[in-house]
Length: 403
Image (cartoon, rainbow, N blue to C red):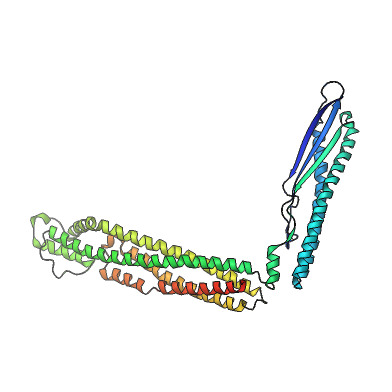
């Protein structure tokens, strides 16, 4: 009995079909194919040599070329039937379209079954050709086994939905509406935070200003000024205190001019109000950050509303499309007004930072108070609440279409 040596080579194709864009109305799952080529060489005496690596590569290439032809065949069939399904859907014949998809499924399975035999035959013929050049392969035996994984062709889900809604991709609308609604709920939560952050900042600035008044009086008394009545507001108060201190004629201030004394008073105040200023600036930054996040959310709402409006224009047969489009426009209008309200707040926050630069020692109290008052004219809370109502209207209309 002759001795045998078996040489194996495996061709593993993750997916036979490489371009599914050619048949968009068919759901064709991946077709994984594995081809195992076994070449058995024999010898009466001793261990036979294995089949040469180069020859095995050529046999694999033959199997690959055979499967490439079947890929072309299957792709061509799917493309042809996808066009037929499209025509049927345009005519409103959904049942017939689904039946065509079943036909494609059988055709693909038959093609895969044929591919196994074709690959086996092609490899055997290639082995014979190799045997003309290599005595070792002349008497060799070749075995080709092909296995495949294929779940079956179906009509694409979106095609069914398009047919069922007369050209309206309801699932796409629901997805957009849900995205808008989700962002709307985020804005609703942010509105609560925004209101509190605004209150925190206003309270912080008010107490900071009160502390600043207290500290200038303490600084004045530490410089020997006992009478602090009838002093002007900031920033003139610092100069006024310095001039009054000089008039006291105390030994401690001899040789100093008003500018030097004013600088001393500023330094004393600076230390006294540092902690409170830091608290106010922290509150200002928190509020600024929240307005930035809200702006990002309303930008997303605007984008999604545009997207949904565009979908409505593409679905002329959807009778609710006009209502949904109009609701989208209301959302867009509300978003615009909310953005304007945010602009008011952001401007206030930037101006507040400028006003309080260098601890606000050079800023008039009235200026800071006026800037605080500006934020009260902002309609963020009102516009934001109205936006959520408009968003819900869009969502309800789309859900009604889906139903």
